[in-house]
Image (cartoon, rainbow, N blue to C red; front, side):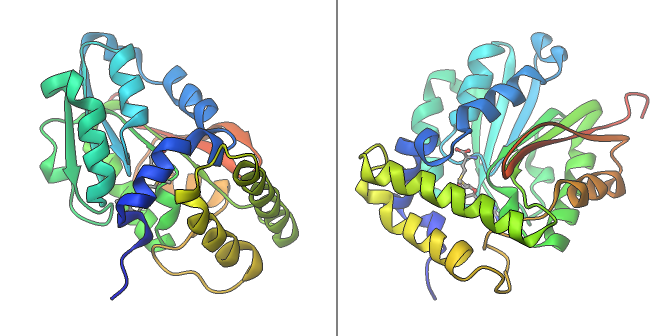
Length: 249
Ligand SMILES: C[S@@+](CC[C@H](N)C(=O)[O-])C[C@H]1O[C@@H](n2cnc3c(N)ncnc32)[C@H](O)[C@@H]1O
């Protein structure tokens, strides 16, 4: 059996070191999520980062809200090892949980969450898995809680979708050429380009880049029980999709 690409140490270290060079809007999406987190976090509360990787978003959240606590949930031991190191300064406010998004992770949470966030992770799930995940998110949030998924999305039009992916491929090629993306991550990028550009249109399975439209995912949010669903931020093939629970629930 081959190892899922996210589970090698080199891959985790390479992504962590160059995330804001690989991803053209890495910090901008983090900013967009941070700006929309509930003010209730001033008084404390739990934030869950689904597929939180090396903990970069949670680090910013815990720095900004000194009374909040957070869980980084991820299926990758190498990524969580980096997160544990990064978040050690927060002591018991930060917890790392090794789990798949497809698992029953909600039962491992100590309290209903004020917010569930995610970046560049949920698109690895097939449509049915995303729908199940969003239902679990709606159940894991407290009244008035919010889900924000800042993720890769696809245009409904195949030609536009391919053009967006080519444009990202060219962005990453420039990063490799000018040295801002370390060599340790080059083979991962070549494989991404092969899967998504060279072999565009081939069937996708769970674990691949199972991009879906914003509209499809907002429909999943509503079907999962979110009272409100919208997209407050979008650029190219990235969007922040938001679901709000009903405060009166
Ligand atoms: C591109 S990295 C993003 C990491 C982090 N969210 C960030 O923005 O820096 C994708 C992350 O999603 C995680 N991931 C992918 N599929 C997953 C799954 N089915 N369950 C849990 N984590 C998953 C990977 O292990 C990896 O840490």
